[in-house]
Length: 270
Image (cartoon, rainbow, N blue to C red; front, side):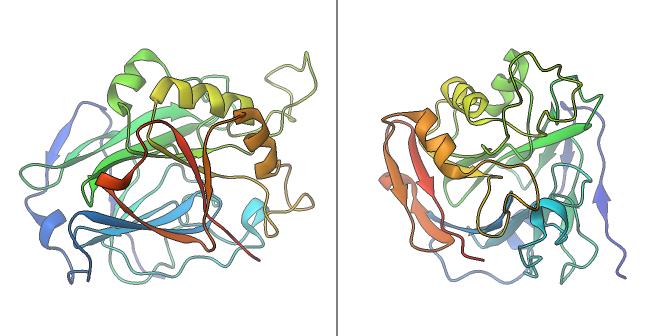
């Protein structure tokens, strides 16, 4: 088993200089610096390719809610993980030698770019039940990206300042709403946003393109975990414009993004 290098910083305001490794680490990709390709591997795992770099977020083991998905085996320059849970923080068997970020903080990437890890909670109890979640914000391929990981808490004013209003927002939407009056300590409370909570977060962040994650598909079925299907979220969102991709990958350009929030659904078949 390969030893992995984790980057740790305790303060969300700390900036660590990493030279120009973001710009020159690994072979250049055959893409325009102003385009970004997203490839969804299921759950909250996405590969971002653009600007000569490959950034993998939340690789997983095929267990629990990710039991039906093949574990991602793709090379990347950087890996971002939102928690140490095996459905969004399994890094030991990844190919290559990516630099791994796992803690909240600001990390300088070259002279004019940085990545921001923003501490949120994986529950509605200040992290007392499911622990911490790290949301990630960075710029790649000319686009401002915000990946909320497995967030389950409301977005505070200070978190909103760090998150901004991204071009592309990836947000979990499949939490199953427990019965009315159920305590937040009840085990039926989900680890991520319900469709209604996701809608509220989108209204706060006002992104251009919204890519839903962490919902039930043919792979993450009702027998594997208690996620709801994408349609539950779509119904909650009402008349918001929605685009459906024919596969699990899409290439974006900044000048072609919508001017108001639009859903972009990536396809997954087990």
